[in-house]
Length: 166
Image (cartoon, rainbow, N blue to C red; front, side, top):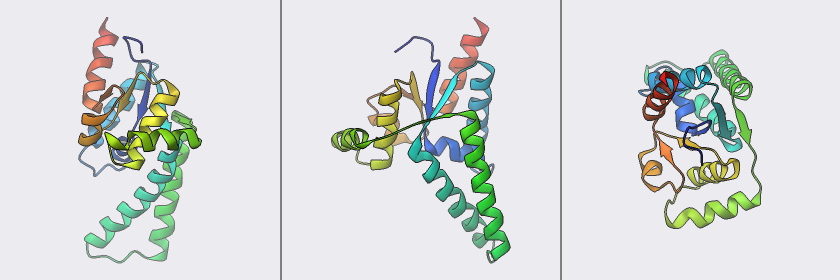
């Protein structure tokens, strides 16, 4: 691992915060990704993140509509799906997917003794496979149990700002 992070793998929850402006972590996620672009940091994501991101954007936006007392019309559902596709297109244009195979599933299962969430463990396997300098997540449990260096978006942005000033 290098001292200065050049490659960061971003967890699904941070991408959700980035794309969904009403989420509490949106500003931090946006600032992190902006700082990464300005510092020529390579952004990575686990290939499973694309599927999870698409599903969660669709689900969360529809929930927001329902929670406001409205009904999700067919036109709304189509627009929401277009939004989810646009987010995936943006993700692919600005970050690199880290592929997976059964060895990643094997590693995810081995990590179960320290962290029980399969999706998180597949992200950890992607961080290992890619040799990312660090993992960026807002998942408190993952931050505590990660066998790879893991930081929050704000922590990484601070680091990038310090490095930029040097």
